[in-house]
Length: 223
Ligand SMILES: C[S@@+](CC[C@H](N)C(=O)[O-])C[C@H]1O[C@@H](n2cnc3c(N)ncnc32)[C@H](O)[C@@H]1O
Image (cartoon, rainbow, N blue to C red; front, top):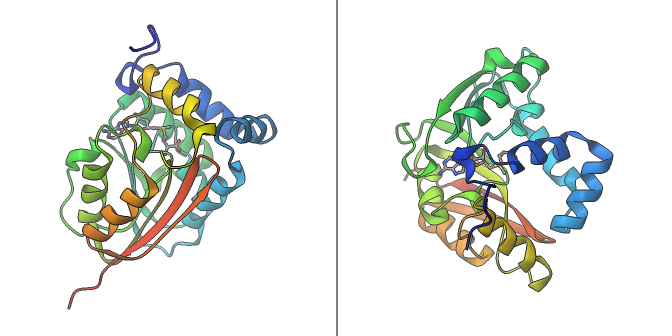
């Protein structure tokens, strides 16, 4: 059963307004984040901050961009070439508004895209970031295959997600999110590790923190 009136991502659900507000508002957001996910909002901010350390010319794919959490890590004039991809044109519009506010819009190209069929060639990016996304995708296994496919050899994929093997404390959150249409089938952290390896990654690191997990893996170099 689906809760009426909330809608999936393509219907611009209520959650798509609440989530960016929470992430933006440091104090209230941190408390709500801790209560909901059992994790620390600062971990998401720290993960996004990695983007500010990238050298000019780095090709980055941010999927799903959502309201542009990852873009907050970019610095004006940094010279990074970031593609912001999301299935929702409305969310992309918000991400670009956020990029303009931050003065980094010249480094960002929006792309309406389904993670299950990314419209980019093999090895197109040096870094793929996917924050709080895997748990929203209808097929997380396929999403990992696609995100690793578009990654260049030696490049890194990093991100965060809810995982289903984080204990009963987070079951109500997963159940409500699924019924609201904003969470997909999700996966266990063990599955995500295995799928990253099967897709061609080595050095797979995934650390659970409350109901969330943060992952990082590098794509094997050729030969
Ligand atoms: C919780 S938001 C997170 C986005 C962003 N990384 C952040 O932290 O703000 C989830 C996003 O996933 C997008 N999404 C859902 N299914 C998708 C799909 N199949 N392909 C691409 N994006 C998708 C939604 O439109 C939404 O913007």
